[in-house]
Image (cartoon, rainbow, N blue to C red; front, side, top):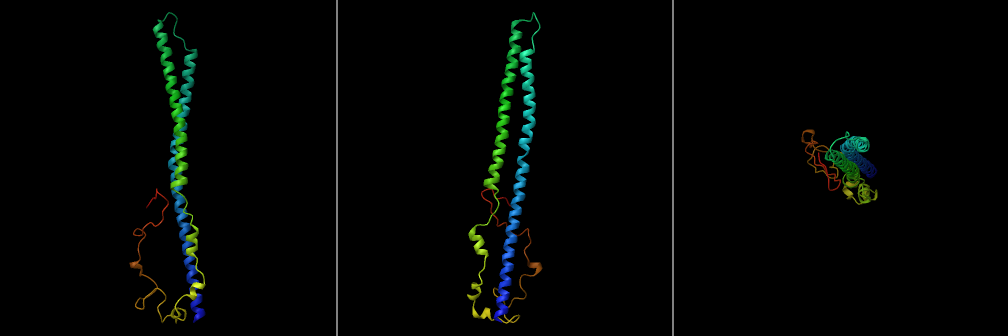
Length: 194
């Protein structure tokens, strides 16, 4: 009986360790999906900024050409030539500001993406204490009550169950549904549920 119960204890503990490792892998996979969502969402801004910056650079080039090569017709009043120059210089100033802000938006979007990926949606790597708590030493079998060590199979209730219960766990109709389960994984201040 002692050998049977010891083997049963080892089997249960191996199953518990496999369950905890599988749960850890699923949490990591879930965090990877969230990180991919962040990458996909944050890639919109740099993509749009690239298009805007290209158009701004082309308009800036056209304004510079207009300032250097465009001339007012001979005999035009002086105020028309000065308005022409003023309008082109103002356009160039606004285009340079737009180029500067576009570059700033591009860099800021990349920086926020990195910040979110490194500080908010981190991979749930288990700590040393969590790994240690999932381990079970065989010496813990020796700490069980003698009644559990020499339990007769199918006659006495296994550890953790009362004698009145039937079967190893809840019936299928009583088992909690995934929608009712709570999200026990925390990934920092930006925890995402659902």
